[in-house]
Length: 169
Image (cartoon, rainbow, N blue to C red; front, side, top):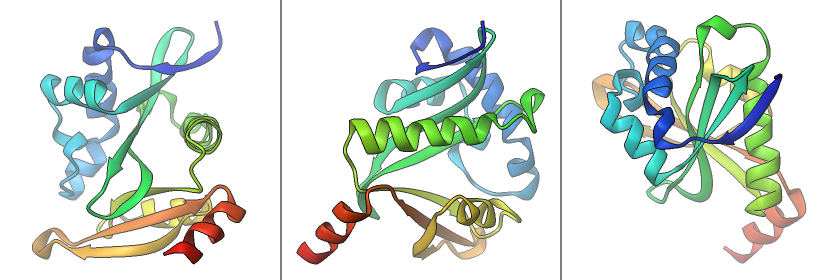
C-alpha cells in the first residue's frame, strides 16, 4: 500500500483523536496548553470541518497529521498547526514528509502563498530549534504569563513573492 496524503474526513475523527493523544502525551507532561494535547472527539471534528486537516497514511493507517488554518490575530500567512505523528512511527521521517508536503504542495504550489507560519511554546525543550533547522525564523512572540511565551515562526517558500509583499506593507 505504501504512503498516501489526503484530507481527513469526519470518518477519520476517532483514529485522529487516538493518534493526537498518543503524539501529544509529552506535551501534556510538560504542562504546555496546546489545544490538541487535550483534544476530545468534538475538537477533532471541529478541526476537520473548519481547517484543512491532512493525513499521511502508511499502509492504510493514519500515521501523521497536520492542519492548515488562518491565524489572523498574528499573521495573514497560512499557518500549520495540530502537527502529530503517532509514536508508533517515530524516527521514520513521516513528520518531515507531511510537513514538506503541506509546505510545498499545498501552501506554496496550490495556495500560492509566499510563506508559511506556525506557533509553538517557548516551554517546549526542542520544538523551536527543530523548526529553525527546517528553515523557520521567529517573527513574533506573545506572553501568556504563567504558561510562557507563544513563539511564532515563519518559513519563506517563494522568496521573490515574499520580498514583493514586504515592500507593499
